[in-house]
Structure formats: C-alpha cells, structure tokens
Image (cartoon, rainbow, N blue to C red; front, side, top):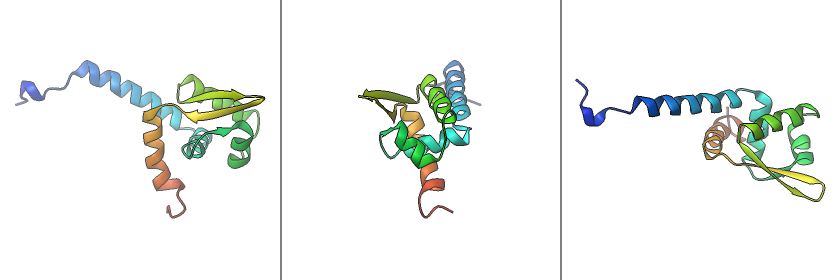
Length: 108
C-alpha cells in the first residue's frame, strides 16, 4: 500500500516527463549533440563551431536555430561575430554526463 506522504504529484510528474522528453528529442540529433559537446567547454562563435564540428552551413545554422528555439543556447553579438553558449542547466548537466562517457579522450 502506498502511503499518502510518499505519493508523487502525478500532474507535476507528467509535466516534468514532458519537459524531459522534449530535452531528449532535441539531443537526439547527432549534429546538435556535437555542437552542445563543443559548447559544454565554453562559449564559441559560429566560425569556431564550424571549424571544430565540421558541420557546414546551412546545416550549422539550422541546428543552432533549433537549439535557440528550444532555449538550450543563447547568443551574444560582438561586432560581426555571434557567440553561442549553453543556457539550459538541464541540457548542460546531461551534456556533461554524455561528454564523460562519449567525448572525453579516454572514452570507449
């Protein structure tokens, strides 16, 4: 029998599960994962992201736009350069775990 004090609010759980599902959908694209892996190391401009990731325009712009719409990254402009950084703490936490398992030099 479930004790009433241990019951979880199903409405809150559903909302959280929906949010987690949206995050995982956004992360399900290899190009977006690659971009977030690079950004997990710090802010980068578009030219740096292109060089580091090997993702060419217009795919790079398209994937960065998805990440912006999902509020996973934010931008700042300095002159003609646009810099990106991860703005979602949930996305950053997940990316750090994925980075440790798949991106770090000793990952297998």
